[in-house]
Length: 412
Image (tube, rainbow, N blue to C red; front, side, top):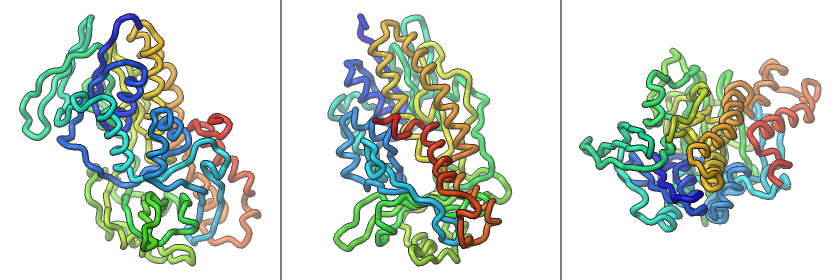
């Protein structure tokens, strides 16, 4: 590109930080504007799939991410009676070049944030700024802000391009799609973190049950300490009576859902004991948004969850945001016209992510549990092969990997 461009990034989450770091690697300046008044290690766990680890490794953050989490050895599916349905190796245990890592989302965010401070400088990240409007003209974009804590007007910002990385409730996207609503199909989720003895080998991603009645996902996010305890992340999904969407990211109540798990005492895990041991408990609606026909409006485009919010299934939202970040950074480096670069980015990423949004709704990885539940009449089985073969279950798992972009051959 002959003339340097300036880029304003709205949002300092995983997507925004990845874009800023990727642009920096390619010699492009950016400044991030974040609504939060301070950055804290918040939230629960996240699984960094191999294609996400590829992206973090290219940003120089792979070793730090792996060191701060737990490298998964396997993924295992169980019915609600504690019987193993299907198990497969994961990450490097499945001969991937990149590992699959369970980590606290706040720790991953801190790793990325500290890298951005070091590489971009503290003045490149402006906190306590809520985007309330933007104006475009032939030479650039003016962003308007207010202070999050006070509501007072903030100083406007000027840039050649604006990348909206401000998540599923994106303020920028709301200005361009003002009538859009979150899509909620009556499924509620609770997420928490507990300290526990390692479950199975201490490195397995576990799904038990199905969304038709109650389902829980369990995986470790920190290695065992001197007392032999790990931090274990869990996520419960259940149909929500009444169908009204709950508030976003609010403290959860154990009594709202533990009744569905009270008899889940198996010889390899005591589910209600794990839930009662939680020191973090949050409640979320299971929501996404319908794919939209356009991400880019002149000098503004969407990245990550602002572009393609998807159901929190399959651990794929962060991975797709990281791929978005590399893709747009490459096009901005390699294409002379920045507006053309935004168009190429959208053409490359929108069809792929649209497919994943639909797949997460219709045939996510836990379709394995649903399929077995249907075939067995939701009863314990003596011989699962009478109902479905392991090869058929493996095909269901491999199909999701192919759609999501982390089939092993794609990452060699």
